[in-house]
Length: 113
Image 1 (cartoon, rainbow, N blue to C red):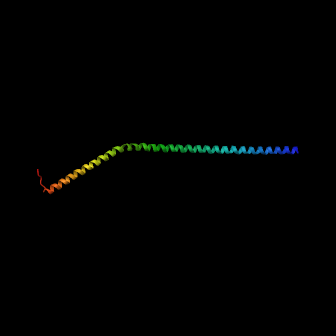
Image 2 (cartoon, rainbow, N blue to C red):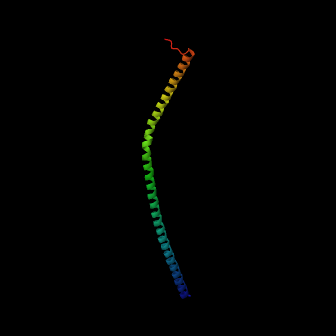
Image 3 (cartoon, rainbow, N blue to C red):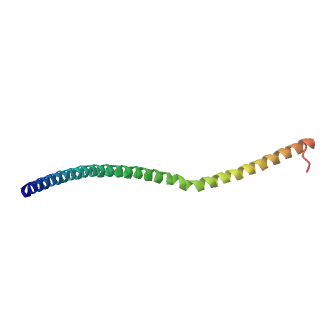
C-alpha cells in the first residue's frame, strides 16, 4: 500500500505542477495581451492629447484675433455716446427753428426789431 500511495502522491504532484504550469502560461498570456492593450491605449491617448492641443491652439489664435476687436469696444461706446449727444443737439435746434418759424408766421411774417 505504501507504493500505491507514493505513486498516487507523485501523480498528484505532477497534476498540480501541470496545472500550475498551465496557470503560469495563461497569466503570462494575459500579461502580454494587457501589455498590448495598454500600449494601444497609450498611443490612442497620446493622439487624442495631441489633437486637443491643436484644437486649443486654434481657440487661442481665435481669441487673440478677437482681442483687437474687444479693445475697440470702449471707443465705439464713446462714439455712440457722442452721437447720442449730437442727436439731442439736433432735436433742440430743430425745435427752436420750428417754434421760431411758427412764431414768425403768427406775427404776420414781418421782422420787428
